[in-house]
Amino acid sequence: MEIFLRLAAGATLLGSEAAEAVGKGGFGVNFDILETNLINIAVVIAVVVYLGRKFLGKILGDRTAAIETQIKEAEQRKQSAASALASQQQKLAQAQAEAAKIRASAEEGAKSARAAILVKAEQDVTRMRETAVQELGSEQERVINELRQRIALMAMQRAEGELPDRLNDDLQKRLVDRSIALLGGGS
Amino acid sequence: MLNFIVAPNSFHLASLEVGHHLYWQIGNLRVHGQVFLVSWFVIGLLVIASLLATRNVQRVPRGIQNLMEYALEYVRELSRNQLGEKDYRPWVPFIGTLFLFIFVSNWSGALIPWKLIKLPEGELAAPTNDINTTVALALLVSLAYFYAGFSKKGLGYFAKYIQPTPILLPIAILEDFTKPLSLSFRLFGNILADELVVAVLVLLVPLFVPLPVMLLGLFTSAIQALVFATLAAAYIHEAIEGHGEEEHAP
Image (cartoon, rainbow over all chains, first blue to last red; front, side, top):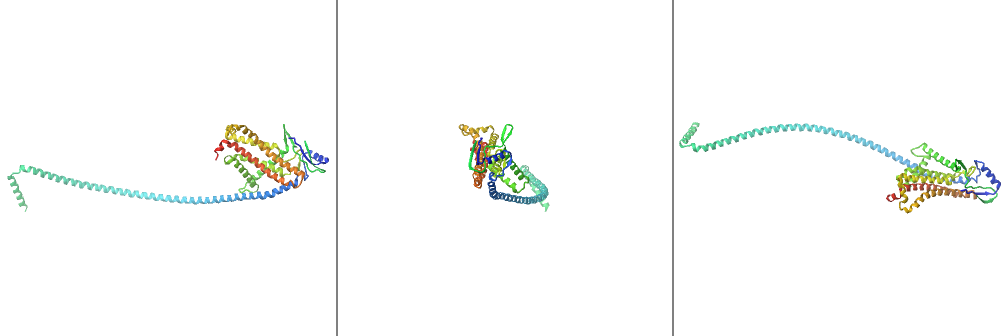
């Protein structure tokens, strides 16, 4: 790539050689305004700064404003969230207190219900015992009565069965007489 | 050696040199010193700007912090558009460095009157008007996309070469050479051509006539930085995605 392109506008050998001599010397500063293109670059920089400041300024300003509003919104959301949290915590505390109250009253109710049930059960037991005893007595009486009737009946039957064999006229006459005597003695 | 006499005037106006360099000898290497000087200047500029922007970080960005955050956002957006939401994050520094370095190099070449400083040989200009700089940047891009492909898919990266059909294998291999070639030549050619056009116009008509070309040069310089960074991101994306996965992508 050893292309050497030299556009030399000045044909003055002296001038170019002088410039070359300066150029070969080492690092230096070139103050030739036309050669260094200073004016054009200044104009370009001015245009870029003028247009760029408007353009970039608008973009960056919008960006800052957007970030600010976002931060503000986020802070508002944070605050509202915090207040919501506080109110919810208060509600939670209230609900817990309510729950404790309900629980205490329920326990109390349970205790009283237990006592009431115990008393009632005891009463029931005694009543049942009483009724059982009563029922037992009446049953005994009924059975005794039945037995008595039955024995009387059987005795009558037995007596009626034996009566034809043992009874004769004489005996019957005596018996009637005795009965009449008994009747007469009773009046 | 070609000598052009532009106008046989009797007074010296200006001279334009291409291919003259300030050579430095480092070991066996002959390096172009003027490129290093301006590169260091650009690097220093970027480092100082970054330091200034991050020295006193505010919650609501103002001034240079705002500007640099805007630049970062721009670069991040660029790489996200190319690489996709999933993979873009690790590549933002690389792509951002490419973009910022090329952009600031191009604009410094156009906006700073480097010709005020006379060198023993050659002249100070944008680092990107030297083919060595752009080739170095393009080879970095090649390394980056190979690294991206291998780290993502391992040896399966080679499947990309025969993915649609093995017939395209030579073209796929050729692509790995044409990518850095086109990247480097595009950037180098644009910047050098722009500076040459401005220099020639300045020789012919020193005042005001070169202004439109200089403004156009600023525009193309910015576009070239954008193109380089975008293409680098696109190549990395291509290496990460591959042909097979693109069909499944929604």
